[in-house]
Amino acid sequence: MTRVIDSSAWIEWTRDGVLAPRLEKEIPGWEDCIIPTIVQYELAKWLTREVGDAEADDFIAFSRKCIVVDLDTQIAVLAADVGRQHRLPAADAIIYATAIACETDLLTCDAHFEGLEHVVYIRKAEN
Image (cartoon, rainbow, N blue to C red; front, top):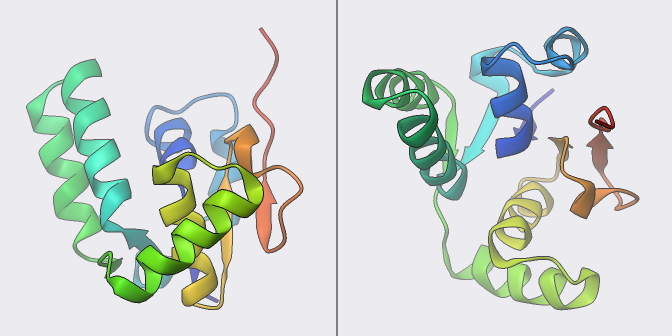
């Protein structure tokens, strides 16, 4: 089973957050992980800022072993539609549209996706 993994889930898992054990059960093998290029961007930016270039480079190297899906016209138009329909920010709309285009579900810890069809949402702990 393939699955799109959202940036929020990757961050929680790679940083060994409280949800890491639960995410570990939900994240498929690397050959079945779908990574939209916008997730590569978000993770490279976040990891560089939070932990440094080396860890960002390591994630990008790992992500290249997965199924990388570029933003194309079909996904862009679909993202515009689902973004408007569900009031999603641009990046989230692209990620969700990628899951729809790939006919799979989306694993996320981002509350923007809660309640949407084909989303496996794992709620972050309240602080």
